[in-house]
Image (cartoon, rainbow over all chains, first blue to last red; front, side, top):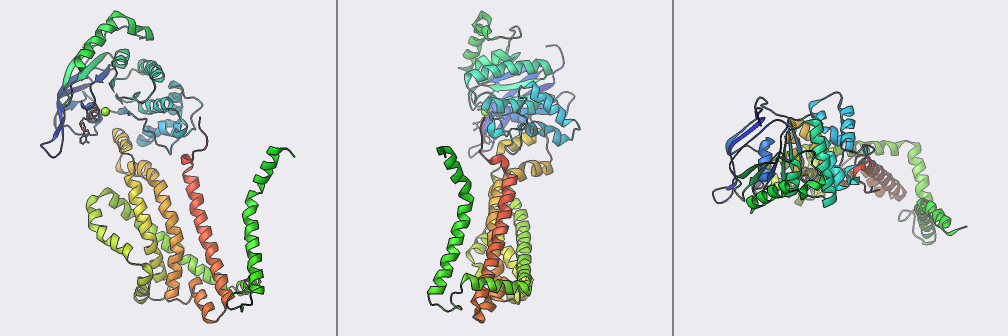
Amino acid sequence: MSSNPILTVSNLTVTFPDNNGGLRALDEVSFEVCPQEFICVLGPSGSGKTTLLRVLAGLLPPTMGEVNFGDHQQPRIGMVFQQSNLMPWRTVLENIRLPLELTGAADAESRARELIDLVGLTGFENNWPRDLSGGMAQRVAIARALIHDPDLLLLDEPFGALDALTRERMWMELSRIWQARQKTVVMVTHSINESLFLADRVLVLSARPGHVKLDLEVDLPRPRVDDIRYTPPFGQLARKLKAAIE
Amino acid sequence: MTKPSLTKHIRSLRPWLGLASLLAGFLLWQFAAQTGGLPSFILPTPVDVWSRFVRAAADRSLFLHMGVTLTEILSGLLAGVAAATCLGYLVAKSRLLENLLAPYLVASQAVPLVAIAPLLVIWFGPGMFSKILICALIVFFPVLVNTVVGVRAVPPALYDLMGSLRATRTQILLKLEVPAALPIFLGGLRIGATLSVIGAVVGEFVGADRGLGFLINVGRGQYDTSLVFVAIFALVVMALVLYGMVAWFEKRLLIWQETSHTL
Ligand SMILES: Nc1ncnc2c1ncn2[C@@H]1O[C@H](COP(=O)(O)OP(=O)(O)O)[C@@H](O)[C@H]1O
Ligand SMILES: [Mg+2]
């Protein structure tokens, strides 16, 4: 892509302290993300995918290397976790509003309602999280991650806990939201199909310690519909990813 | 009458069952005390107790003693809960502090408060202050433990969420830690509220010139057993009201927890 990267990761290494010299989770990871790009990170479990997102979110300092955010020194982050991670004592509306409460925006209420519409939860504003299905809870989490207009959206296997049918519906929703909102996204997944449905680019991490094994451009046309998985280009890309993961 | 409406009818009677059983209990007591041949200073009848209550209420002495005990309970509860909550939060956040304080906390639990109550009365006099202190001490431990457990039970993923949103320490405290720890904390408060009544009475037994514990001592000394019963009932009512208030708060604050209906 031609525009300046919004995010540059260079030689990122993360080592966790342990009894024998430290556990290396990420090893010299480097990549760039352009504005409004949708990046998927694939890799076996334990390859440091969650660790990578936590560093990008500023929750964990790099042991070595750097993470640079272009002109934003403190980028606004929207994060979606593997579990919906809602606050059970807040209603749907109150959960979505949380990021704006922290920064103190005046129009929190109306923006929350707008996002509830966007993720298709109109009518559930005042429900407690305990009343939501897994798919609905995850949509609340996505709305919460979008409400403060973040510079970077980080998603950690957000649909891992959902059944196959719901998951595919969520892919459609997410790519619709992504196109409507023009966000930059880094999404961790362990599903090749998921990454090819959604991403502009897929990074494959090796087994621990994770380093970038493959950086693959996904030049499939959009919008990507269900049938795309039976087309030859999709099959070729899937084969490449599969080969890199194994 | 059709079958469902009959069961509905019975269910609507259910709240009255408790009252009816209580009434039956009093009748049984009246009957036993009257026919049992025990003197009134061993087992007074409910009617005796009632007339003693009317007398103590008329000269306002009962309410004076109740007021004293209630003040001790509420002040002790407030002080104990405030201290335990603050210290509990710090202990939950700092393993170092936990290790430093652990021997004291364990020791304070091993010492029965009843045994050190006389000491506190010697040191701080027979006035209200020593009672408040005893109340506070007895309330302290369960509230402290539940605060520590409650704060430690905050899901780490929610800390990550707050961190990713650049929340300040105060925001993390108010919007995450307080509401997340509340269910367990309130459980401790409920135990503390019950214990605080015991604390006040124990303190008054040891040495006091006012309060319901003092009234019990007086009644015992004068073989005015009806007065002892009046004081006991007054304590029961106060304890129930206190417990009920905490339970009511708990219900109001934790509506999100109830597993009532699902979608
Ligand atoms: N806070 C931590 N302390 C110690 N080790 C950790 C921590 N977080 C992750 N790890 C370790 O780092 C490795 C990578 O973890 P993670 O990033 O969660 O992998 P993934 O998300 O790809 O499954 C794992 O071996 C994990 O046990
Ligand atoms: Mg992970």
